[in-house]
Length: 166
Image 1 (tube, rainbow, N blue to C red):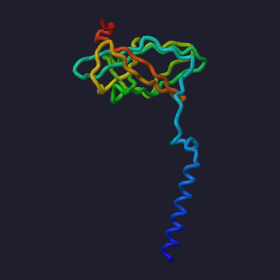
Image 2: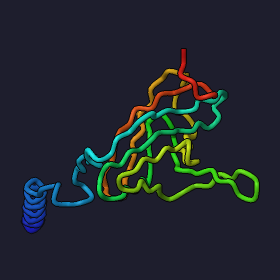
Image 3: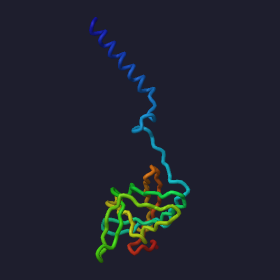
Image 4: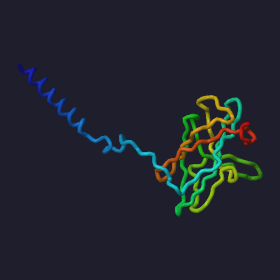
């Protein structure tokens, strides 16, 4: 009889635990809460988002113009895409008479200003395409900002000379 009461107590404890878990609001636990897709708002506009296509699975580069009409600077801190296994932020600068590409932790878009990636040496390095891409394809890239917001942008794949596909 003693073993029966031991199992009854264990069963009651298990049932109490299950009821407690069923009543628990998962959104009250930050790690389990679904994060809404926040966007930087109407103060950020994207123009001319494109990817320089290269053959033979070579790394590609993504360019765009970010227009911040807001009163505060925005800091782009990362980018991701289901079309590439890795997306990193880079800048090419002239150093000692030679061009040097370096990774950057963030890119600041000042308040009331435009930032043209190509003109300022910024680009996104797009590594290891997950499927073959060709000029004229569209590629989704999610831009992530320091304030926690993100923005999904469709990029057009262009020829190596940056001309649109015909």
